[in-house]
Each structure stands twice: as structure tokens, then as C-alpha cells.
Image (cartoon, rainbow, N blue to C red; front, side):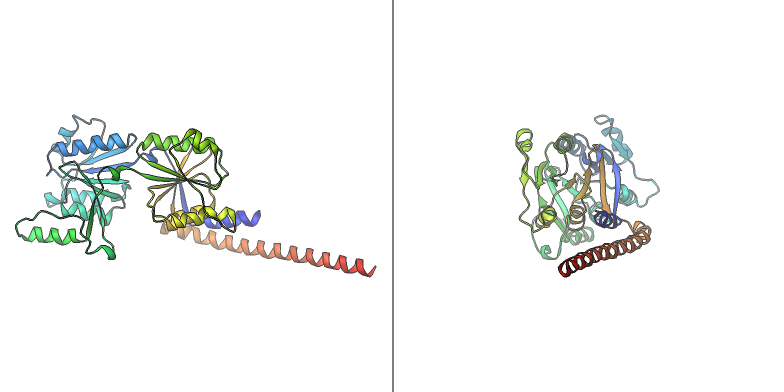
Length: 349
């Protein structure tokens, strides 16, 4: 038991655990309004996001003259104005996006394929980026990987030749644009039940998710089949881990098989170290802990500063671990020797 706890302590040195409020599951959304689109476009985008994410914290990056118009319909929204010191003025929105890049928005919504805000969002922000165009369609935006360089998913209307349009075409060549429409606002969430949590804890976590993200598709990766799932949440998808020699590692092994499913969130119910390692290192998802006291915690890899602080602690834990391993081995060896000597003396007697 001491060795098990020591291994857990060593593993947790590499991860940062931070308590969050209930809004962590409700989405933090940035809507970029560069002033080029008609006013009804951002208004429509805000209404649809508020409908699908009732608990979302929505911020609108726009100019002062547009803010006064949008505030009439949405007086409670947070508005971000670009600094007037930023020059040239036509790039103020894009430059302001650089200044707020550390805010950690879950979702960034763009009204057009204006190349400067688009490149800033894709390269410098860690958020999911989507386009809401003038026809009320949702499109996903991300940088292409090597295998998608020549994949055609979006055909832009031909425009007259100019240096500006040429640069825009070059920039869009590296962006993958896919028509997702309503699907893009639906989250896929995986809840991990390792068998140690009470159903009350699991049920409350699922209820909070449904309250914040009513369109979410929730799956549960569970070691054991609970009858309460069918009775209380008949629409849940239950995933059972495949056969594993060591049963308690079955969940971590199954997570590796699910790594291509692109879950938006992975919800843990305890600090079991193997699912944590598998989730953070191999799943491109946000990892959250919902504990028995109904608190939300975020888990992420340690920052460079955190690693520098953790290195001495890690070395100390390794030394203690080796010491305990040697001590336990000597105790077992001595016990085996005493048993052998006792049997030998018994035979001679």
C-alpha cells in the first residue's frame, strides 16, 4: 500500500490540479465582430450559442460603435474593445486577439474568413475555432496536417486578382474548412467510472453536464455495469473496457483505443493515476475531475515552472521509492530465509 501511494505521488508531480467553478463545463466563448458583417450576423450567432450553451460565459470582441448597438439586445454580455493605440486600425481586432490569447477560451467564433483574425486564432489561440457565415451556417476551421494539404473541402468564390486576395488565398491554403453546421456545437463527453465512485456522484456529474450542455452526447466508460444508468439515464452510451490481464488497468487501455474519438471533455471521478496519464498524454481532450464533494477540478500537464519546482520533489520521491523497494525486498528475502531455515531444522528434528 505504501509503494502504491508513493507511485501515485510520483505521478502527480507531472500534473497540475486546479479547482474550478461550475462554469468550467459551461464553455467560455469569444465572438469576434470585426465590423465588416451586417449587425444581424453576430446577433444571430450569440442567440444560437446562448441556446446551445445556457451556462456559457460569452465575450464579444468588437468596436465601440458596434458595442452600443449590440448592448441593446444583450445588456449582460461582456464586451472587449481593442486598444486605440494599436495601429494600423484595420488590424486592431487581430492585434487585440493576440493580447487576450491567454484567456483560455473554449470556443472562438469568427464572422468571416478575414485572414488576419483567422491566422491569429488558429496559430496563437488554443481554442476551437469556428466560422458563422452570413447564411447562418457553422463551419469548423483548423490548420491542415501533412496528409490534408491538397484536400478540397471549401471552394471560395472567385474574386478579381489583387495582392491582398493572393495573400488571402495563400493563407487559406493551409486552413481546413469543413461544413459541420449544428454538429459543431454538440460536445462529445466521456465520463470514467472506475467502480470506486458512488452512483450519486456520477449522477450529479451527468446532471450538471446536461444542464450546461443540453446538446452534449455523454458516454460512460465503466468497469462494471450499473443498473442505475438504464433507470435514470437511458440515453447514455455505456462503453465496457476490453479484456485486460490486470483488470484495474482496463480503463487506461480502453482510453488508448478511444483516442481518435475526439471527446471534448474527459470527466474523472477519482485521482486514479493510470486514467489520468492515459487521458492527458494520449487524448486531445480537456480533462476534469468531479470529486465526491461535488467540486470541479481541472487537470493539465505541469508548466515549465511547475516542472522546475517538481524536479527536486520527483528526485526525492524516487529516492524514497527505491529505499522502500529495497526495504520491502529485504523483508521478504529475510522472511523467505527464515521459513526455509525453519523447515530445514524441522526435518533434522
